[in-house]
Image 1 (tube, rainbow, N blue to C red):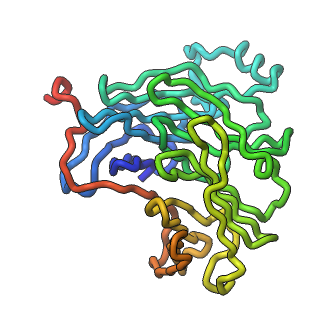
Image 2: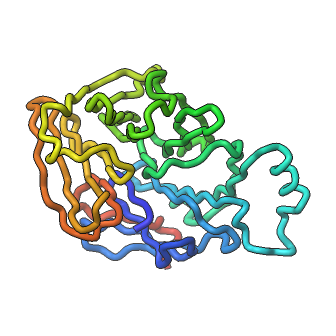
Length: 295
């Protein structure tokens, strides 16, 4: 599994690293999936994400980002040494962007995503919400976090600043994660120093509003995991936060916290779980491929 959408679609690859063979399916409806046509084999995938634009009729898009510095050698490539030299001189990093649209059932190469070399993707999964895909980024020159967003309809990129109190990386042990909350883009700040967990929501006016605060001091430290880059967050419902600690492969625990009741529940999830994808879906069958492309 390399990507998943909240509506229940799962994207799989035959290769864990890079690769160009993908298929998509909905696991809850017990039907086979559809194999996708291969993307450009020259590009070595770095990031791949999926979002659903509408459910009836189903339309989804897949965004595949590939670091241009990892391009396979191709003497006939349109990417010349002159362009590579420009990127170095301009202190710029370029990502090839390929987009798969289920409506046309094909990949297309979009304009490259260009960022300064100071930006890097954080080790968190993308979030699909509000018709777009969102990644948490860090700028080491400005020492602050930001969110990179891709608009699924317009196919445009934008940057969103974090709240002033969260923007800068003031405490290395604190954890910041972006989530989908109540159909909006949200943020979670897990502070190791204060033992507080804050939930922020980006409202329709593009203003960050603090929605919830949890005082972790009220819980036994042995029960709730400490801030860790292996801690995954998601909202099980509007009032329930889901946390999964992947820090120890030999003993993986999940936690549910209800903001209304203040209750924390823990469940042993098993061993050797490398990653987790959160989906909320039904068992209704879907037509993944448009009629005109079914042979």
